[in-house]
Length: 334
Image 1: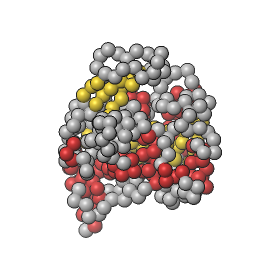
Image 2: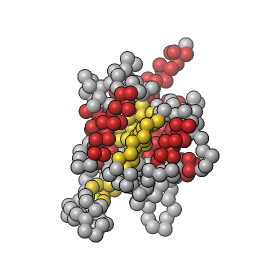
Image 3: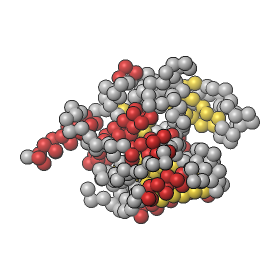
Image 4: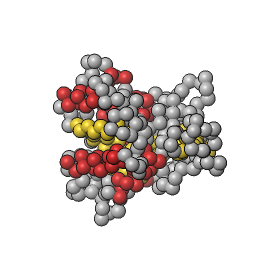
């Protein structure tokens, strides 16, 4: 009887998930140059690079954001000292963009990717779609998460921000995990091999997803919300660090997932000092959490997935190697 009820729930969950609509198309804006001497911003409107159709996480809008679900996202150019790239903000209808590997390559593992951007915007290409493509090419299903932003550039100056990182962005992270679990069979994914990787502000969301309880609600009307939202492993890349873990007495919960940590030595936001990412490594290790740390000499902050002269450009292979060490690349039988 229990097995029958569970099967019915999962089938209902899958039916709901498959009906999730695509987000409203984004609009574009053209900002002025941000960095003196940096490359010129193109004179044409920014657009997102080609990518699969996103899937919104809640058919009727995210809880608390239902009235804003039809607002278009904004695509803008961001210019830094050596490159110009598109960013996304005004996110009120969170979504995942799926990169599903070919069946002959797929190994059954999945990674949700949370781009960074200071909770103001999302660096959607090199911290999102580019890694999604790369992982899928290497047999790992990937899902780029657009989560609600606690300091969204789209909020008019002087207007209170409507979202909080460890409330709304965290809810989006858990819902992403649950949605993928609800469609695991369809996508050829082992529901016990779903990871969450975040860059910068997205790294903060990843830490929150590992730190907080993501258990589903067995009484939820939506079958997806009955599923566990806790990821099975984490990738934490030059992360923002939640205030909770900065206290001297913070101890990771026993459920904190195995974690892969990465930063550059010349990152001003994540210095390899006792107060930077090595502190998180030491705390996780002391808490018996399986953890691996890599610190590159060059790369600064925000390198993402990028082909350039520094050795840090090869970091995705280290992440894949770590997954292999944890038997996450072995073809799943589930």
